[in-house]
Amino acid sequence: MGIIRISHPQITRRQFLQISGLSSIGLFLNGCGVPIFEDVVGKVSQPLNEKVGALLLKPQTPVPEFSPADIQPDKLIVNTFRYTPIIDQAKYRLIVDGEVNNPLSFSMSDLKALPLTSMIIRHVCVEGWAAIVQWAGIRLRDIVALTQPKQDIRYVYFQSADGYYSSWDIASALHPQTLLAYQKNGEPLPVDNGAPLRLASPIKLGYKQSKWITRITLVSNLLDTKGYWEDQGYEWFAGI
Image 1 (tube, rainbow, N blue to C red):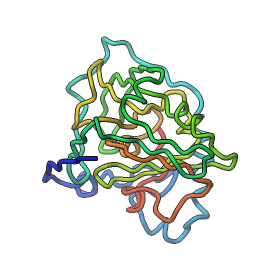
Image 2 (cartoon, helix red, strand yellow):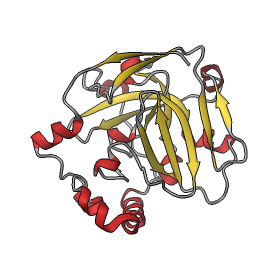
Image 3 (cartoon, one colour):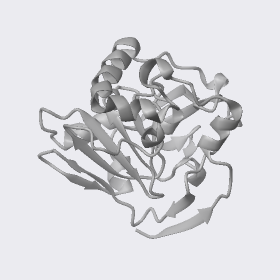
Image 4 (cartoon, one colour):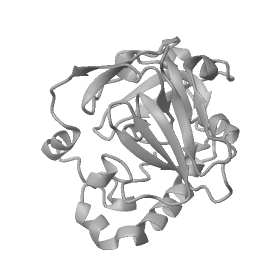
């Protein structure tokens, strides 16, 4: 896979949150912004976080969507982790593996041959801004089903071409409005917004919606690393 790096020197999200005083958001569920909480409680807190989040958010219930007139094309801010990878779509492959009976490798043509789902939802960032966006792509649950996951699967890991990584609970990943999107507002997904493939969902904060996804791994247990921002103290469940 050929990748070109375009650097974006900018303030980091953690620096922004520290400056703005928003680093305490999400204390109710997980002690977001307080890494020592995770250090002390460790794995004991994770099931509580997951159960409480699922109870409050009902992750299989569809979220009401907006009309095309509500779309806010200029409100979606581009946040970059390290650099913007430009991926040759002709060589691109999405690997889906882990504890599954049928690991798969998809080209973009393979993905676009699957049923297309479109939704108009609100994208909410932990930094305090939001935007109503139309995303279109494949339901993640359809991809998961094709891999024939083993019965004890509980989590999904996402790896991106820029080195970013995150993990979700399986219930949120299987939500009917969790997409692997390759369109934004009726047009091909821009590179800055995660082309060729990114996560889009109305039930998770923005930092859980990985861009430039290259690998999805299904597992029965969380690893020591849960996600780039999560490993620095951000809330793991991060539901909205």
